[in-house]
Amino acid sequence: MTRSVSTALALTLGLAVSAAVVFTVFAQRNHAVSASGPAPDAPSASEVVFTQAQPSAEEKTSLQAPAPPKVQPQDKSDEWTDSGDDGGIRSGSLSITATPKTNPETVKVEKLPEIEVDSSNVRSIPKASVQPIRESKREIRLTSTLPGGSLAEKLTDAEAETVQTWRPAFASQGFRGARLDAFAVSQDGSVLAIAERTGTYNGPNGTRIVLVNTSNWQFIRVFTVGRMLKKLAFVPGGTALAAIAFPQAALKQEFGLAVLDLAEEKEQGFLPLSFPFNTKIEPEDIALLAMEERIICSGFFGSTVFCIHLPVAKEEDSGAQFPFHTFETVSPASALAITPDGKSLAAASLKAIEYFDLNSSAKYRRKSITSLDLGWKPVAIHFLNGAQTDFVLCPAYRDDTAPIFVRSAAKDSLDGRSAGFAVPMEQGSRIGVAFKVKGRIDIVDPATLEANDSVILEQLRPETTGDTAFVFYHDAIHAFCVIDTNGNCFAAGKREGEKRWSKRIIWNGGASKR
Image (cartoon, rainbow, N blue to C red; front, side):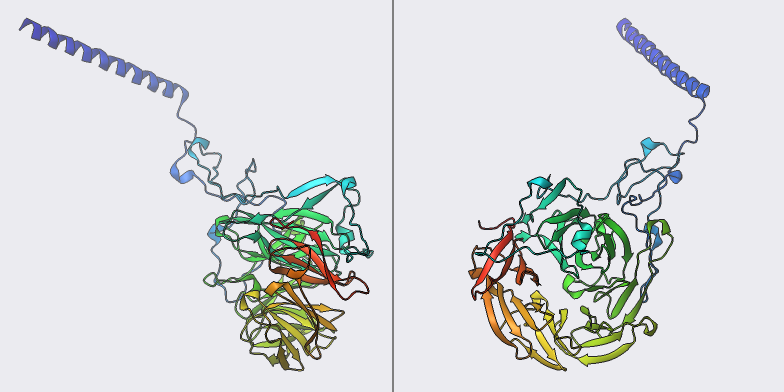
């Protein structure tokens, strides 16, 4: 009994001491808070502000367009607003920032995915170490004289101490080949533009713009932009490049028209365009045509054709709108061209070719229409011999259909041949048709549709592998310049006075046979 009483007394004393310690600590904390006062403007959940970071100064778009016709008003809740804090926030990153009343420790930051840019295929080397292409009578020519005032001359930095070299990267995930999404040749033929996709296979993606001087095949400029570009067109009379940018939900990027300043190596402006997101749009379905004072694009929003007016507003005129207007075609126009007389716009679709007056006062009044009923969407129109009614229409590669020649509304096809590129030669007096099967090129007389010459590129040495991705005829060297799906670039033609075709490598792709 005595031991039980002693144990009970000990437990009671221990509990009393513990309670006293807890009370003392609590009192000291309350005393400290009352002495310093409550935390000034302690944040509540309702005071946390959610914003999106604006693009950087180099990527800000100074052009905003009103919503085009037939489009529901855009949800403004996702518009970019200035967070007021540019400390280390990169362009395009989604962030949660706080007002001065918010305790930073209570705010979490969430960023959009990064675009991975592998620059291992781009190098800067001293200009003095560049070896010019050597010509010989045993090989076809690659070099030519650069005309004064050409675009290549305008974009070349004569005082630069280094130059860039580039080799197309080879991808094996998802597909095997070079990730080259678009090509364009300037109106004077002096610059070749290539759009190489950056980023991972699953995205998000950017674009590396590669500019090549076609007189000596040196790289003029190589730079990247943070959009996925799928269509290119040089704007005549300046140093701008128009491009169609495809949407990327992960980066909150809209479908639209980007205008790049090639001299400054940056985006000059961007215009969001209507896009039916429930419809898959292929790059081949989109037509893009650039003129000195306007850019025209179609094929992605029903039968609506967008005409964007240039010049693009300067950055200091950020309040100015990007002016444009629209007009309608009978069917979505997938190919656009200017007629040889320069007075009309030709818009071709699977149903018809329509001619619109380019006179500004006429506001693209339809002048005439010719039924085609092709059954496939043309991706290019090339006029022949300066005649408005004579032209060739090219199908997309995926359609595996031969080009169609139209002469005074009469249609003829190159039967027995697969889809390919029709490349005008000598102002359209001859047509080079480059087919994807074995890289075959036929030289066709438009009057008779007879092939008076032919070559199979796969049989020419040195050997390269890959289907034809892009081809153009280089008038100055009298040769076809070809880029294949493995990134190889080469010229095919005949040496002066010879009947046999020759091939000469300009650069090798990432998976070339050596």
